Length: 464
Image (tube, rainbow, N blue to C red; front, side, top):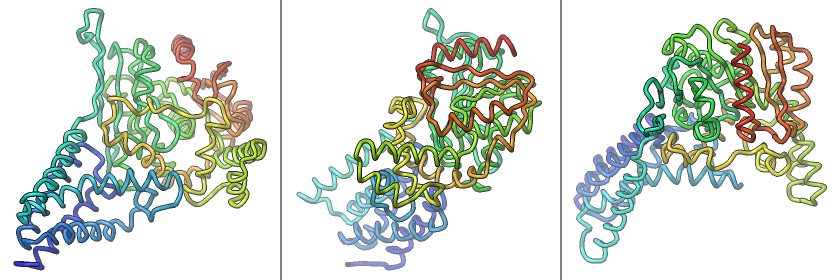
């Protein structure tokens, strides 16, 4: 290499690698982070290219950068940043994690190094120009921010007194994303806490349960680690059951203050219903009622039952590969996400209505990057939070609720959730307690039978 200044060659990409790993340990997660990453990476490439005046800059700069990133983020854990794993979910983690990170940082750095080194003649110019065009297209795609459509009246204009926005709630050391929609800002507030770790339900709530917006101000939370709150996963303290409850309370108090209501309605689904039930039990003064759907009670027991059902299904369908994986692992709980992969990957085939749809995340409420990171956010949050949730058993931890308790369950709910719930419901003491069973639904009754769910919520509102 000619005219090489080794300090500049190494210092620029290494410094940016350290900074990038501290700033965005799982790669750029927002449009702003992506655009800054593209720009800074290209600038570093230009600096190294000019310093070396050699095509080797296109290799040296990215390698130094990637090494700095990987070494700096070693304390961060989760499938998106851990060593690659040879499985279907592992491939997703690699492509959506390091692959996207490289697209937004390494590729611009290569293009910048090429231009800085003056590699713009003939065939080389064409190749560099094509790479630059790819970088430009990526920048345009990721620059589109998340948004939500306004609520409009019959004349097509924004409905006076309505609210439709993506809000950011300060939860202390990090921020949480909340979709707030309602026809009337004076209506009762309903906070929805979604299910699995990393779940993204804003699109589902707007599209399928828009009828709720006529009765409530509906606030849909992206739990820490999911969707617009993915970046909060690495905040302090580490994500856990307790921080999940604290986040629910923080958003509750934000909504109470903003909409001038002493108490709000709390709706929670599946894994989020553990957090919801704990929040309602600890601070009943904040809530008019608790509504659980796809209610979870004891995750270790649910997982063991689910394991048994999927193993029986694998044997009945002669799926010897799946059977062997489950037998080799033995029943849960497990120490890492990938051990749960055979259960997670096959739950939808075994249980009716247990899975979501791509439409759940393919919504304007999520940026392109949030959609790309859908599975990674779920895997990373599961990896971090799921172990702490193993100690919760509502039959012991919440024997009583001081607020009215309503439950909306599917008649075809998976056995691992239905059986512990039936036991808890029988034991639960509450001022008012009602169970609604939707005949054609599985684990997601509010989305499988949305019209009936809206009607049910009307009944609950009338009673509350």
